[in-house]
Image (cartoon, rainbow, N blue to C red; front, side, top):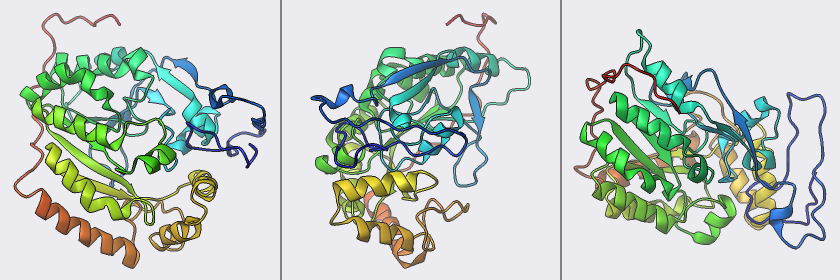
Length: 354
């Protein structure tokens, strides 16, 4: 494993955990002697993929909607707590540094999406971008896979939802406005902290909290229904910021807010514990202990119904607190319903070439 003395600036994970699906394992070399952290073996690598299907059925009762769409596998944002890290293991990578440095780009996503919409038995139902990894992560600026897919949603008048923590979504306000005018889009910005030092340590390649507030404002001013997601709530790190975050989001124009409570499933537990003992050693035991309190004594909780909100006095007390705050701050606001009647096949009847 990577030398514990060397902290990799610009990355969340500080090591590559073993992959339970591989018979062999490898070590990342020591970074001693390197002047710039970007020359570390965790420098971003891109892998092109041409999937046969682009939609993933949502089987969890904790997550709304029927399908998710992920243009990218892996995520350069590097959020230390990300539950999606474990999914990278199915591709033969590690949930650690690999997850944020070896990114799979699904280059034919828009074409596959259009093929799906043209099936005779297709019934329109809201599809959620970023059910796993962020659709507006840094590589989207170059590849524009998310924008290409949004053009397909617009072309077919199909409902879509997006959740992101990157202000790059502002680039696509033109398409989102067209979708919003027909009741076809919901947007949510994930806001984890307004503390810039914590943000840089915990999710190093994301937009700042201030920038996310600006993005919420610009989206709502453009007539695009925008809510926020506080997630994850981490006791001892960002939980105390909840009132300030909710008020800032409401002041920026958000129509509602939700939250998820942290759980450290699979390899994420090892990755998070390694990180917090390096970055916040004075708080590590308290934070890890409170996470366990919210999940029956474990860092992880995979049970439907409790895994996203936690249980016990700590988590349940926060739930009551959040509901009271939300009722007060977001009074008389709500996310509009999706329009499920607008779907149509384009008059040309031909599949676009991407």
